[in-house]
Length: 87
Image (cartoon, rainbow, N blue to C red; front, top):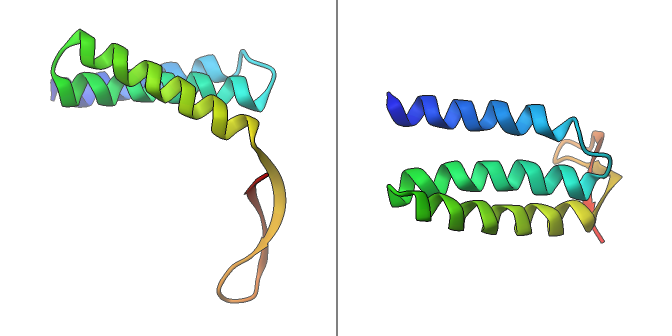
C-alpha cells in the first residue's frame, strides 16, 4: 500500500510539473525523471535507488522527447492515426 501511494504521488507530480514546461523535450525530462525516481526507489528500496532512477529517467525522457515528432501512422487494420515518430 505504501509503495502504491508513493507511485501515485510521483505520477501526479509528473503530470502537474509537465504542464509548466514549454518544449516536448523538457516535458519528457520531467515525466521521465519523476517516473524513474519512483521506480528506482521501489526497486532499490532506498533514496540512492530513487536518485539514480530519476537521473536515468530524466536523461531518457529528454532524449526521447527531443528526437520524436508527430506523424501519421497506419495500424494493422489500415486505419490512419496520429502518433509519434523518431527522427
